[in-house]
Image 1 (cartoon, helix red, strand yellow):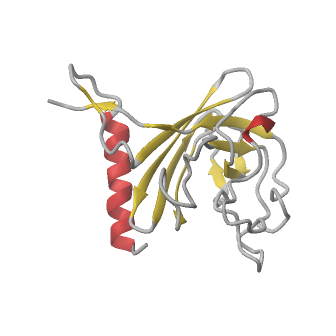
Image 2 (cartoon, rainbow, N blue to C red):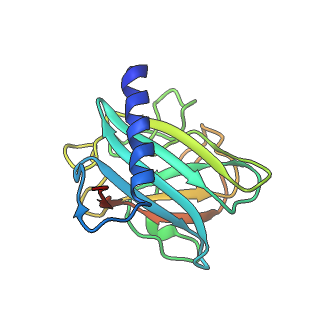
Length: 188
């Protein structure tokens, strides 16, 4: 995905995030096949932010806005099943891996589609990350994120080492959110 298209798509994600906060009389589904959102929560129900995914030219574009986490690098991944049952979120399955690759960006045999770079959480407990998943779609084709069993986004307690198969040695799953198509109220 070239830089200009990626920047335009990220601007679109930001605009949609802002628009979702506004109020209006008319609810409009915008880009029903191109926007999904996951609300991140801990096993106790605490809110830890959200992930917004847009379908762009050549792949998916993610924006992660996390809050309330302990400082440091966190492994973050798209997981294969759209379930987030506590206390350990194992119901989300393994990393999303429609191509049957091994784990990690540093693995010579390729990475899972669900492998995302680490999220850096600052001293205030917040972190923001924008990333892409090349060759993936939201709903259509062999690399569709929202297949029949859905998908989830998981935050782990430690950093991903980008090579250990199958999970990157990133520790316990501390937050999880199920992806759902996004609707928002359009400004009139």
